[in-house]
Length: 179
Ligand SMILES: C[S@@+](CC[C@H](N)C(=O)[O-])C[C@H]1O[C@@H](n2cnc3c(N)ncnc32)[C@H](O)[C@@H]1O
Image (cartoon, rainbow, N blue to C red; front, top):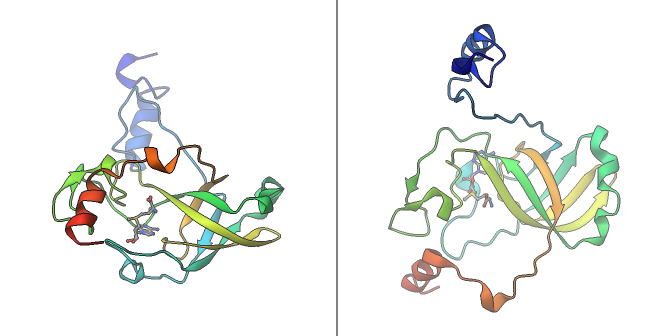
């Protein structure tokens, strides 16, 4: 393989990838393509409607609408109280490695925050499963916009004892704000 275009079959393939807008690809680094398994129905149409900052509580109900072709994959999900939803920040653009979250006045590294502006715009939300009807899961705790694509769902399980959890800069920010 031509080393200059490794990761692509040929110069023609590389040029094609640039033409279709994949300019950020780094030749030689693997890229991954994912498809949505479904979409979120949420009451939020604007990011300003979603609670933010210290003490924000996410109680809003929504529906995880799974595409019919993946419905079989929901078998036995009803037994779990909480789920991880892995999704795409499809309405955010670009990223910043340092940013000031709404919970603090100081900047923090993107990987120490839950910012939507990340190199890989992946969101992770823990929701409470309220019920299932065929390919629709009714959940509480959504913080995504209506129509957000879902990449995956997994049962929420944790084996980390509460006393071992540290909340980093967030604990300090909350203390400063008296939360
Ligand atoms: C701070 S992020 C946290 C999301 C998730 N719980 C996480 O930790 O990855 C939540 C914010 O993402 C933004 N957001 C929600 N859905 C989005 C979407 N589809 N595209 C871009 N931004 C979105 C909203 O501003 C919302 O308040």
